[in-house]
Length: 284
Ligand code: PDD
Image 1 (cartoon, rainbow, N blue to C red):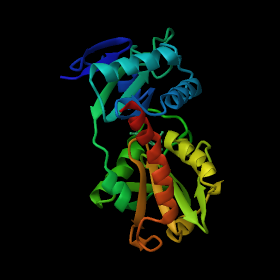
Image 2 (cartoon, rainbow, N blue to C red):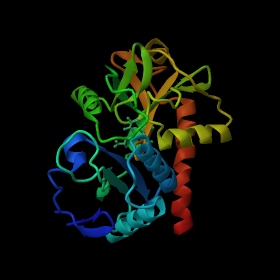
Image 3 (cartoon, rainbow, N blue to C red):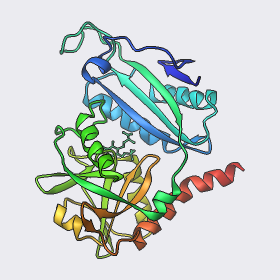
Image 4 (cartoon, protein in one colour):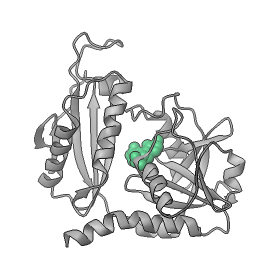
């Protein structure tokens, strides 16, 4: 049995969540998923900063400082001897009698953090996959990483039922992101992705890709584009923690570009891999 974190306590994983935890009752909480490569969490500080922002936007006080949270998560990775996989961490507004309004005295808690072993899937990254389109029916604060994921769940299920890796979401014809990843398209040698506003989650992988493109001299346009633009793009890819970068070769029935992973996508993927491959080499 692997170990989990409950607040700052590392314990056996069979611990149960209180039935009146607000995360359980209302989805009143936030979360992060952090990739672990070769025993090292990747971009942990960026994930902690985003957690802090999500908390602030929901007027939720984190139960500990981000440096304490970070150190507890590192202890958890060590306790579980995790080499390759993810850390899942969730913070809720705490336990209180079920009333929609905030409890008079809030006791936010790290209701759980656990690790999961997950092999990398370099074949999918190298060969690409397909996606489906789905309407974006989420609320208007998609920038907050909350526990409320039902629209994302429904969209992802559509992808699963169509043997696709992702459901790419659009709001009134404008592409936003995907059910659990960000979306990029390449047209005329330049990258396009939805701006980091309230309509998308500003992915940690997305931000890193934008930074890497600067090093690669690839122009990135953070601007909106339509489903039509997407279907006529030269290249499309999605990005998220641990999924990293997956080229999208077909969306619904439409082949993207020449139906193979594109040159720019491959360039970015290679640069992204060097982030953790260098880490692995340094450790060896
Ligand atoms: N999802 N957009 C949405 C809606 C997401 O759920 C995610 C990540 C991303 C990419 O963010 P990042 O690069 O920081 O992982 C974008 C995580 C992995 C999940 O819910 O499992």
